[in-house]
Length: 216
Image 1 (cartoon, helix red, strand yellow):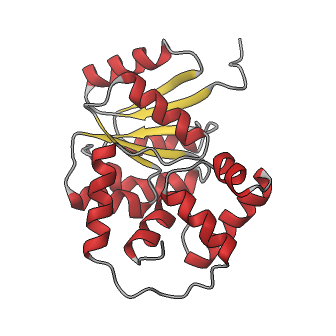
Image 2: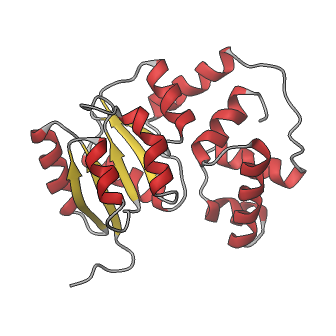
């Protein structure tokens, strides 16, 4: 039987057998989420993405054998540009957070998060959001604000700046469109224009650059 169109498909890259299996079972008990695959290494996921359709969301551990989670983000996004990659890890040091977001991670969660929090993050990512643990979010803002260089002019229009501010606030495309009184596809076009002008390829990278360079 095929999954309902509203079902969020998920893959998990996690080498800890007990945690990975427990999380997979827990997610599959929830309505609207289907965790289809679990891999223990990035290399296995790379191979799978060349042979089958990608999931909507990929949950990615950092400390993996072979290619690390952070090192694997670029290749994962190359193989599946529309797939949201959410880091799920025990690590919360500044360097790993910074590198993951700049590499294009859509979100960053800690393994201490409950199943419902992880499920909410999956749903948020599917809707275009950037789910980040609140504690981590504060760390990110503090991290970037300490190294805030002079503001550059990227030629963003007032409307594009409005969109960028809403992205930084964690709003989805749908929320941003509603707040600005414009259509969903119009908002999406503005976001794509923002990405092009900032020379980034993902929401996470746009947010990181905006905060780091004091654009918002």
